[in-house]
Amino acid sequence: MQRTLTGWHVFAIFVGCFSIIIAVNLTLAFQAVNTFPGLVTKNSYVASQSFDADRAAQDGLGWTLETDVSDGVLTLAITDSAGTPVNPKVIKATLGRATHVAEDMLPELVWNGTALTAATPVEAGYWTLWLELEAADGTPFRRRIPLHVSEPAL
Image 1 (cartoon, helix red, strand yellow):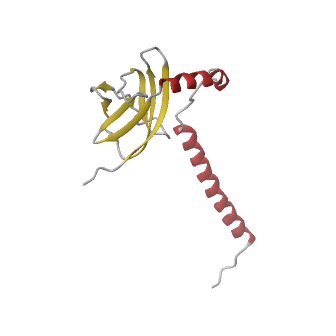
Image 2 (cartoon, rainbow, N blue to C red):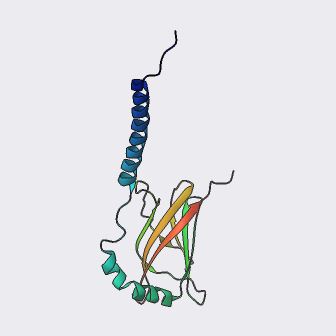
Image 3 (cartoon, one colour):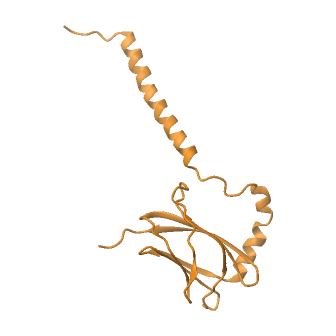
């Protein structure tokens, strides 16, 4: 006995396919909104008014940053234009994923004589370090540093 494909069958297939597409889109949209970390600045216009002056002050410090995460330790080496290690005041440091805040941590950076270090038990992947530092002369220094943590060698 052969079954006939009727208009109702085509309609049911059509509705079923589009229902799946809509469900997937809604799921992705819901996940995107719920995992977004939030605002970077409350008012971008106000922040933009001092951006050039802040950047010039930071560049005037002449600092060079070298950042590494390996064996569960975050190392942040800062040197001035003469190559001398710099020990700035740490206002805030946040290490986290760029896509969500669930794994964010506030590493306690400690000066070891040449660099700031902190224990950071992180998994392999892409991370971001948000820094707020202060120079000895009171100049604020802010950076967002993307990091890639590799799998440990076996």
